[in-house]
Image (cartoon, rainbow, N blue to C red; front, side, top):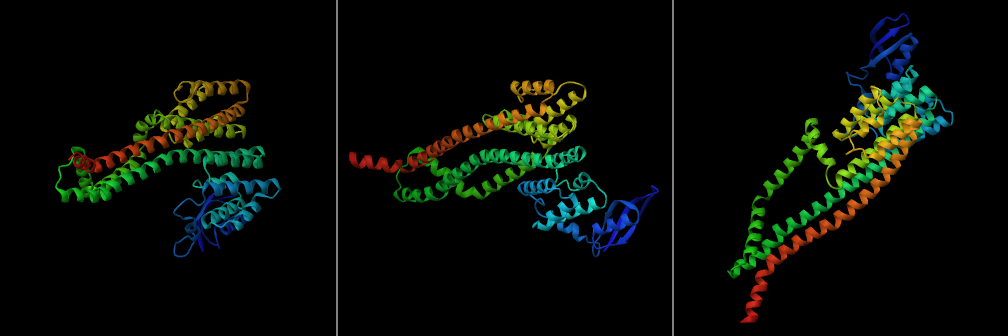
Length: 408
């Protein structure tokens, strides 16, 4: 295969051209042998098709969070055992089953063999290795604590995944319950009630007003339900598209934080993630401002992002982190601000942030328990009352007829 390249010679002159090689790794090694430091190598393949690149194409991410966590723990164990980094990637790529991730690991190995640092090699794959991941690796390379930082990454991912799963479950459960409830009500109105109404149509009896209204709703749903389903689908698609627009998020995100129960859960989970991530970064030797930049990109709520950006700006001006967070007490409670302040004064910011994360992780658990405890019975009661209302409305004429027969 032919590869295009751009590189720098030992005389610091930029050169470019093409060469034959089996893959990009071999191409880079050939350039090194020619005493050319490559800054770009690409375009290999047949007919202009780069099959290495095609292997990286997938409908989802090359590896999920759980897979990346397993890779990180295995990488840490190999480094701890004294295995060289290049050999680590050779071992890990050989045992990897996912084609896209396997090829990425091979490319990282090739980049390191060609003279790149581990950090430089990882930066080429941002879809797999986030800024948080790369920053911790870079700090580990600089300080000589790569194995320690790899284990910190593993712990960070493990705890983050646990919190995310809990919050996701708390958000999804009420939605599933609501969808099932709406489905049951729709079935009653569209299928069951029309069958019962046929009996009344044959008898020509005068129906109570409440029964007439329920039958009217049932008839309307039978007539227009395809349009209703279509409108609901368009609303959901439109809402999802609008949610991706930053200007819309700037309006909605502050309102989300003020929602009863859900807003409190969102704030506590954000504080947990922020404190845990900052603690990991600071303890690994990442500068505070760089750590803030990483945390800002991790946050999903625009209101919280704005507070962190403002705090980062104040820290760069010489103010304390506690001062910046304390300006938004509706997001960061006084306890968080005080613990951060103590950490800054004592020089133990990472330890205090870790304690904040532990405290708020427990509070997230409590908030999820309270949420499910309140919502589950509330939805059951509401749906039960609606079903009872429909049944009474449909059987009321029968009860009235029975009373007339008994009275007559």
